[in-house]
Amino acid sequence: MTIYSHSEADTAGAGALLARRLKPGQVCALYGELGAGKTAFVRGAAAALGCGARVSSPTFTIVNEYPGDVSVFHFDMYRLASSDELFDIGWEDYLRRDGISFVEWSENVEDAIPPEAVRVRIEKTGETERRITVTGGDGE
Ligand SMILES: Nc1ncnc2c1ncn2[C@@H]1O[C@H](COP(=O)(O)OP(=O)(O)OP(=O)(O)O)[C@@H](O)[C@H]1O
Ligand SMILES: [Mg+2]
Image 1 (tube, rainbow, N blue to C red):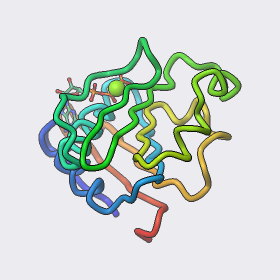
Image 2 (cartoon, protein in one colour):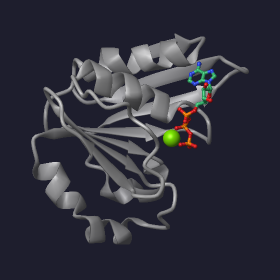
Image 3 (cartoon, rainbow, N blue to C red):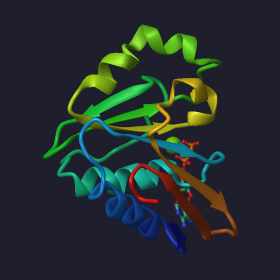
Image 4 (tube, rainbow, N blue to C red):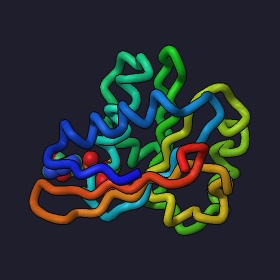
């Protein structure tokens, strides 16, 4: 599935659309450069899942939890050099829990991403234009 976004709100809307198709326990791995719109995408997803709090970047904490109709675990792997450091934060425990994990900078921990994860690539194609490509999961 490919979505063309023309604004931050569009990208959040894409996140909301996808979130309604995800199930607890699933992982959504996000890829894309700085400022691509990964956090905007997760913000829309979390809102659609009934998480009341506004999602912000977890850069200083690696993971933020948002309770909702379905809980959202929002990871930012930007500062991680490898997946080795994931053991310290209980990555495997998160995957076993009944929430949906959204993972920014999945590039940095590729070997820890489950093969069945849904993968979302966000590419900057202009100042406010983004191409969002969703693969994996049961979507296609
Ligand atoms: N179509 C668009 N979709 C998403 N964001 C957009 C779009 N057009 C412009 N923007 C801007 O790009 C920025 C995206 O920021 P965001 O924090 O979501 O990116 P990110 O991929 O999470 O970056 P980082 O790697 O730093 O975490 C925001 O400032 C947003 O306003
Ligand atoms: Mg971000």
